[in-house]
Amino acid sequence: MKILVCISNVPDTTTKITFTDNNTQFNTNGVQFILNPYDEIALSRAIELTEGSGGSITVINVGEVNTEATIRKALAIGAADAVRINAKPHDAWFVAYQIAQYVKSNPFDLILTGRESIDYNGSKIAGMLGELLDLPSVSIIKKLDIDGTQATVEREIEGGKEVLTIPLPFVAGTAEGVAEPKIPNMRGIMSARTKPLTVVEPADVKLSSEVISYETPAPRGQVKLIPADDAAKLIELLHTEAKVI
Amino acid sequence: MPVLIYAENTGGKFKKSIFEAVSYARAIADKNNTTLTAISIGNVSNDELSSLGKYGANKVLNVSGDKLKNFVNQAYASIIAEAAKKESADIVVLSNTFSGRGLAPRLGVKLEAGVADGAVALPNQDGGKFTVKKTAFSGKAFATVELTSTNKVIALIPNSYKVVETGGTAQVEDFSIETKESDFRAMLKEIVRSTDKISLPDAELVVSAGRGLKGPENWGMIEELANLLGAATACSKPVSDAGWRPHSEHVGQTGIAISPNLYIAIGISGAIQHLAGVSSSKVIVVINKDAEAPFFKVADYGIVGDAFEVVPKLIAAVKELKA
Image (cartoon, rainbow over all chains, first blue to last red):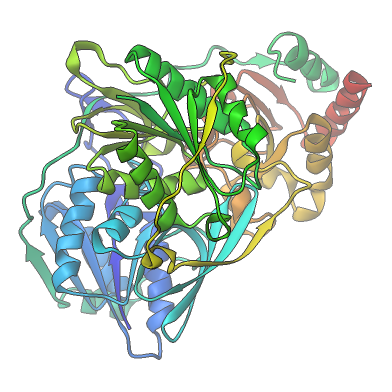
């Protein structure tokens, strides 16, 4: 089984988000970039699925040369090879289009992405790839099992889940629960350096969106503290002042 | 050109998040001096369908049939795209639900439309540009995105736009459409939905707890407080990682982002990753025994105290209020 895992390079979860150039650019100064946590789950499940069955995993990233550290991390965790499409990931449509172009000439049995990247949170890549490749797609899955050419997935819905069966190939976005993130071991880290990383130039595509500016949430006022022995006062304030209960 | 809103049903009924999205789409239609068409897929009663008129839909296209009774991502996306073409709609609005997030990207490709997912406000159309404010960096920021394509798809975050009753009526039309067999490759086997609990993404009130609770056996009082308030329960990442609570309750940067009217955080210190997922809550209450907990800095109300002493007092106070 050949699995493609789409990965993105995102600011570490502890990053304090700030902007520059009159709030038009994300301030990357001093920011540590990591493998998107949801993509790490996708990759970890892909490794479990191919263990013992002789399958292979390719990771693909749309990014400039600075994403290679993250790509090597994915190789260290256990992907066999990597593809980097050499372009700034303009938006989800641009990224999905580039990956679809690659997959059209290099087919896979299964394509996994994280449910969303933790920077732009679009959860669009899985659906866009599905549409571009005429494959079924499931955006947010919590469980993924494969038996021969048929997969069983659990999709998250409000207040519950749906269980679906889908024939391979298809595209899915993985969430927590699909696998525990794998940590690279020393052998993985050593071998990652020499695993193949192919750089592909991007295809031309008409863009459909543009980030104009950013802002951070408006700060809240001073917290109103209520003494612990007068906790009932809180309920009163929520009822009469905040009017939320 | 009219605006199209996809009115997702849950077991044949529309939820509040759909009325919000219809109200939102109505406001866009008004701004552009046009009409609003809703499309519903599945088995929904005529009364329920025409109720969308109350929120500003002029017409409701109804697609039903056994095969389409339950959500099928690919088939639903094909139908909504066909409806958009039939109506010559250039703006398609959805609610940013789990299903909406599956549909929006497919629609974007089908309609060659820019997609603004996670929208939190009405589009700004000043100066010939069409921009939408959306969440970014997992709740740590917002981005204003310009959609430069002719067609546009917008997915509105639940609880970010108020329901507006216009008091209108909608005419319901059956819309029949050929579906492709290949759109039904994914097959639904089972739906598991807890009916006795309020689902977290839909909840207006949320009671959440963290490691300060010391163990899963202490969640009884959290659930009791939530039940009394009519709130959903949530938790922090360490709690779901430890298996004390299910992953579906984990709010934060790598869990789900919510924007309820009230978020009560009990025994959660307020790590930046957690705050990201709850920062758009309207009112935040923090209960923590550590007065230095970072969560107090972003809270509206706070109690510095031991959860095991404070929560029972809150339960008693809510009981009294409801009595």
